Length: 85
Image (cartoon, rainbow, N blue to C red; front, side, top):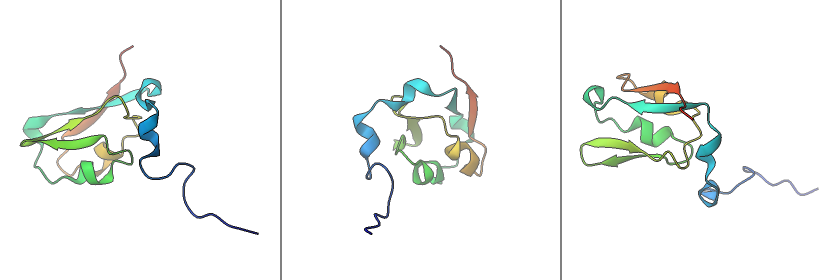
């Protein structure tokens, strides 16, 4: 029996699908509280958090609202808020 190790999609596979439309929570970045540690960017499973100058930006087109970025942020600069429809 052949066993394939890995996820359903390969790395970056979700970039072909706009997955941000079905989230119920969205991350909100409080730039004044950000210490620039980059942990949010490192832990985001879809690469939706990225540096833009001295602050970070979130690509809501692909963000699923999982909250990992907010959980890993040591300065509390990211909070999860209800998605506005």
